[in-house]
Image (cartoon, rainbow, N blue to C red; front, side, top):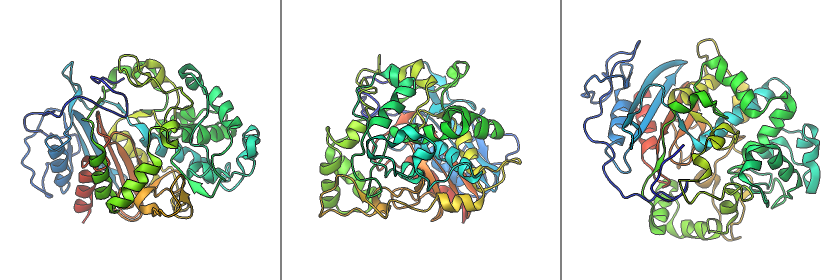
Length: 456
């Protein structure tokens, strides 16, 4: 469910304006101490807007500041676990600006590609149990996948975006995409765009179906059902891939920040990646045009093309929320994202998802060994400046520093992000309903920086 004035998921169109007025108040939560010991904790105790443990006030300061800096916030939440214990739990603003509905403790929101981290965790759970061999060919679990020259693709190339299947030629309708099986049949017939394992490119939508079908073939459960049974329920998460109708009332409405120019995009990428402007310009020209592979990938064979009119676009529908798009449509709160990642690196109330050896195997960078698809031969983009992908997780790098060199997680279009750090025992989640598509969005970055500062 979203509301915009015009434009689709990729393009907001309302003007820049003040999105939140007045001081952000951050109150006490049961079991939390005062906002003291780390930063300027001058915010007044508020009415049901969360809190932080002593020593974590800088995160509250950064969260408060996000409502007043560009692009601002409408509503947002941030949560941090350390060593399995929740130390930050903040929320504020509006879940629905037009209705003046406040963002409350149990508000949820769509987190876009932050979903991919949850999907990767499901695959690694199966690998940890010995039910999935990441180096085995996909056809061991999904025989029909081997058509059109795909019989030797190992599972790890699905997780690392190296399979050559970022798009579907189609045509597919939205109803077919929501039904799952038509997408799987289309992927079975789809030939790779490049020799698998020699290049990589972000599989923006197909990632979820490729990994999800392997999980389904092994477990007998859809990805959404597996996630619910093996991750969300044991940890008590408010997170769904396939939202039950009874949970619709909690969902925040998404709006989009102001559109930006090509020059602003280049400047933002230069700032985020540390690459020079000529390199960034060549990268954009070769890979991000209207008919590029990336642009076509997002349409899923035409199924997701009707994004222009927010009154009828697919992402405003109950059908989209209810369906399973494990790459893109998880709905969650920040607390659940943080708790999920915390359980990959520590014990959380008696639950640990991944053991250290699984995390170590899952987080070895893969895209430093292959070229980004579509680049001209003379252009070289280091993985840690463009797509620093391990087996389903982004690794810490200049564009996404997270909190340390061992950090891993996944961002989502619009600004949300979840990650873990095994060295510090951190699980982090940030979600927002003001989707900003600029690469230099400061909101999650400032929160991560504050976490690093409080960790010392």
